[in-house]
Image (cartoon, rainbow, N blue to C red):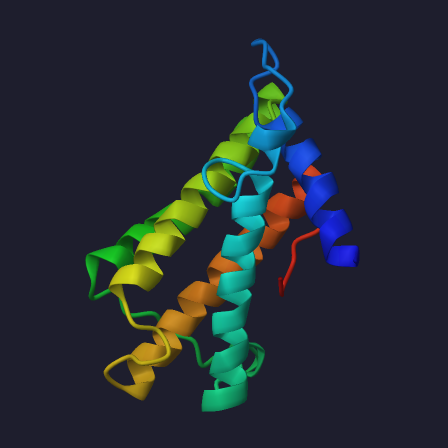
Length: 167
């Protein structure tokens, strides 16, 4: 029940914030609650998928990202174009935040969150994470997943939306 509340609240809030405040938009529950496209529902599903991958990495493969970070045992290999594209998208986060702090347009965070979700989807479609060729590659890709999750959660937080870890 709490997940449904978070999805509904997030859908309305995101739909309002994703638009440039200088433009008009049409209020539509159908558009807000769509599971595809630039909606909070789509973004919540993307985040839940990401969280599931990281959780399975820990539960089924013993890869605990927090422990790795604490031990300074973090390295990321960017061998595949989809890995590089995701890393580049993640590196844009500070610039997006700086831009929002300059012009006070929260729709820029929405655009970034939607873009990073799309790039992440391409990454997990093209690159095996849990079934990677070797343990080092799996760890590297899990680090990319966790970094993406952290950035997405920060974006959700800035928008006042509670991210879901399971749906």
